[in-house]
Length: 451
Image 1: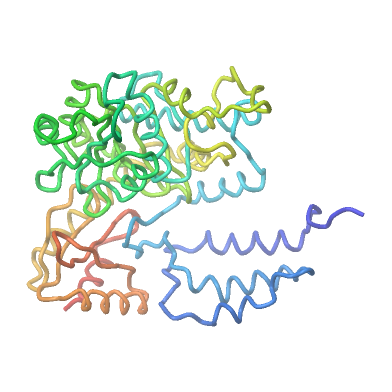
Image 2: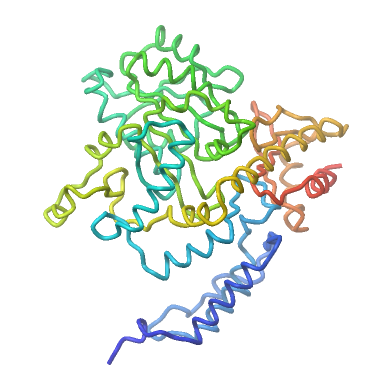
């Protein structure tokens, strides 16, 4: 008897495809979740998983009617918290192709076609950053894994570069604005942070050079991490200055562009990334501002051979992969992987880079217009002018409790998903504008609720 799990079920297929079609048609995508759970999850899920299966229609109805309403849609133009997502229709559809084809892209041997497509997308990103012709890497699940994988290479190549010391834990130079994943990565790799004072929330070459000249433990520094668009405020570090100091001292230069690196597509701000071409490693998350589905991070190395020497896994059953043209498993902390870069590749091929540039530019323009508008509203205060597409501001005389109550009411009314942040020790509001359909009418309506 054949196992029914592997038989084609036309009715279930039509059911799922129809649900996906209805979701794809939504424009604009609503926030969906209003902060009130329609059911108790324990009650809704009770008895669902057991020895016998269930009618697919029943399970899908449970999801669509009881679980989905308790999920905020990150691809809504009204999702303005954290870092949203706004995958293109083409990328969403091709993600279905990746799943339906059960693509497994660990090696060239298994999936040369998928790897070639991903590498084409990586090459485009490397060219935008100005990395040399030999640059390359792979797609991983997100910025945290990308940063960790790059810093492992930085640590393990330090001796060959003549930096660090055999005694004591290695240090990595960072500013207090570095993403939280950097601290986690350092803890995992057995390294510590060498904190460099920032200048107006920006890591600069001058501050790095001064810290290395006078700071205790500077002889243990093996790498420096700069940020191409901080998550909290979209600030771009002095990449040219930091890169120059790193080159002078043979430090590994890593650029975390998980959010802001997408702005390399935007001519209006490309000059702010000057110096990124000096990076030894660089990340950008397509699932953020490059309009791809979760989860996807592009990890690039100036000299991929260095990463391959560190990350290649060794086992008898893997010997057959040695000498292959390009194995993505050689460039990060992973082995089995789905080709996360293919939805981006397909979308880029379908729409072209001009469409991406226009979408990114629109977010930047909207953020600038929003900042100008905030400066005209008496009860609001702009914290700083946006460099990219994040606007940080305050409602005068509000406490954190006021922001939290406002945020909850805003979501319940389906007007927007905006959560508070902290800026220089005091609460503030933050708008992360990534969706090109987020417009000023929408933002002015949200801001008016603060009156």
